[in-house]
Amino acid sequence: MIGILFVTYYNQAKRHGGTPMEATFRAATTLMRPLLMMSLSAGIGLLPAAVSTGIGSEVQRPLATVVVGGGGETTRGAILNMWYLLLQHPDQAGRVLADESLWDMVFHETLRHSTPIGGQPRHNSFDIVMHGQHVPAGSLMNMVDVSANHDERIFKDPETFDVFRPDLYSGKLLRSGYSNQGRHSHMAFGVGPHLCPGAWIAHQEATIGSRVLSRRMKNPRIRVDMMPKDIDGVSLAPLGLASVRELWLEYDLA
Ligand code: HEM
Image 1 (cartoon, rainbow, N blue to C red):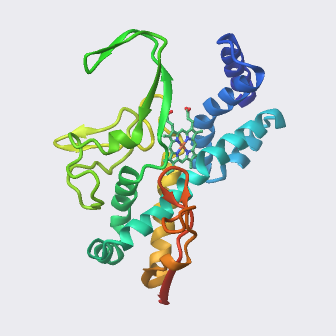
Image 2 (image 1 turned 45 degrees about the vertical axis):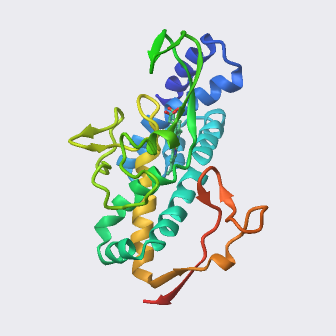
Image 3 (image 1 turned 90 degrees about the horizontal axis):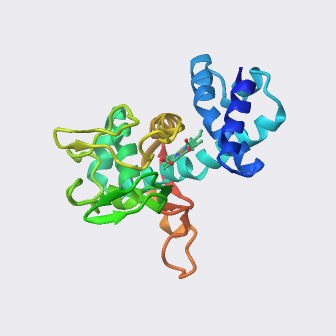
């Protein structure tokens, strides 16, 4: 079944004029969603789920690349940033470390404040007028997630890291986004048909992992002196767009 789907997606992509390589990756990306559902419902890893369908290595390889490329630095950076930002706000950290249920809000506020991916390029398929500007069909547009997440018309004091901000929605991720009674989704996972299919996995990795860590580490403190620096020798070395490359913590044993 997965093999048939792959060939269908591959042929569709080829008809749109892509190279064989592009068509392969496009098909693998599209397949991610049914495979993720299968792996989540069966409680097995994504690649074992793919292998269990009998698909060949020509599909497994691009699939592995999409998974590793898609979920590698973004999730790692998000976890590092969650702790880095939180521990710089001792009042908020105190509340979160005393109540594990608050890690969900830390995850979403971190992604809003320090969005790991800058944006997504798109070609608009029809003429549109945005903010009084006519954009002809076929133009190259870039949706800048970071900017949307710091739009002061949507989020009050957007530069402020506040896990308890009342204007941020941190419930179940919706493909169409959420905006209701003054609460809004952040854009760190994109929005619409290409909303990150790994968003829920990233959420689970980051929040469950942080809960486990918080039980083991008492009184965690950031050791900036041990963290790698950027070329100016002062600022912290980045990972991707807005994450710290490494986070060194000192803590007491629980
Ligand atoms: C905090 C972690 C993550 C962030 C911030 C993130 C962010 C994003 C964003 C912004 C997009 C583009 C959405 C669009 O084009 O509209 C995307 C797409 C994608 N992500 Fe993630 N992602 C994360 C984790 C993951 C994980 C864990 C996986 C896989 C297990 C993954 C797999 C993918 C794939 C396959 C796509 C392409 C989807 C498509 O084009 O339909 N991501 N992600």
